[in-house]
Amino acid sequence: MDLRKAYTGIILMGLVSLFGDIVYEGGRGQIPDFLNFLGASALIVGIVTGVGEFIGYAIRLVSGYLADNTKAYWLFVFLGYGLIGSIPVLAIATGWQLAAVFVLLERLGKALRSPSRDAILSFISEGVGSGKAFGLHETLDQIGAVIGPIVVGSIMLSINNYSISFGVLAIPFLILIVLLFYLYHSTKDVVESKVKRAVKEEKSNKLSKSFWLYTSAVTFNTIGLIHISLILYKGSQIFQPIGMAGLTSMLFVTVQGVDAAIAYLAGVAYDRIGVKFLYLPFLISLFPAAIAIYADKAPMLFVASAIFGVVLGMQETIYRAAIADMVDISARGFAYGIFNTAYGFALFSSGAIFGFFIDSAVSIHIVIIYTVVFQMLACFMLFYSQKRKAF
Image 1: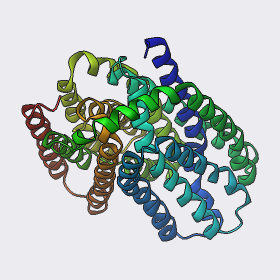
Image 2: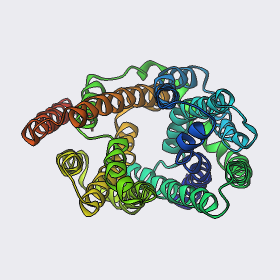
Image 3: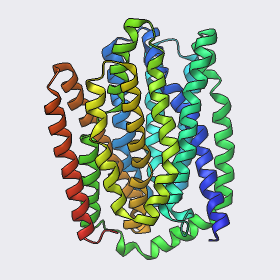
Image 4: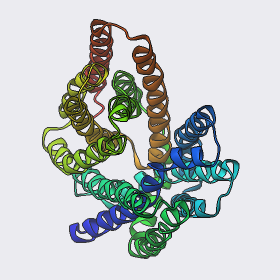
């Protein structure tokens, strides 16, 4: 596959993700408020969003396994992206129960498409460099993640109408579907050739010990990194009393903006330096929690958000790229499924642990010791995975 065709495929996949993020990230920023408007309690909102995150990650293990065994990568991609249409349909919801169903369907779509999307991206980008490929994809993806909340938030601020705010997302959803069909027709021959190769290499589809060590490293890193929702929660505590609750969403935009800016650069650096570059996000992960938990002014929260955005940009770029470099084609869907399931478990654990730290007002020394221990474990696992010749 020539480089021009490879870059075209990467950009097309990135544009599909860009418009997908406009839709579901745009909706995600408003969904808790919408559920509240429909009469849902805080407990219900927490359960719906929590179950959604669990579905979005845990089912990736199954969808990745099925994709590898059936080789139906495109089927899972089309099903997954198609379910993003559940977000614009929120415009017709008149009760929180129906709205919750639509929210969970979108998260199911995320689980179905992600392992296959990453596998296809690794197929069509061969020769480009996995870091650059996933970095470019993530950059485009995050541009959509910034645009979406701004669009929906602006409409709500202007006319305060949920139906219109969600309904307008049908436009980028339709563009997404058109781009997805164009991507399929442009790259299906390349993907099919890689799938045929994978069938011949079926004997090599077992995951190595180095893969499990690497996945453990990322899991420890994420458990030791404060969840973005808690940075936003701290923002709410500071902004609401002064009548500026809207600034909380600007913390989220800061995270997404930094993520978009860092993603491609991180990918290029990874291709040049290799796996050693992953020590950098592990070390940077030491800082957001201590800054955010004990912040009493807005500037510190924006600093914490920006640092978190740097780590997130690397997590969603080079962490995924490393899988493509260490796992054979025949097992990539399953590998991405396992990796994302572990990542989802780590996100859940991080939210619970750091949430407990905030509610209990623990000493900053405990937070620092906790983050240092987990990031040291992450570095140790990464080092040991290298000794196992993972890369």
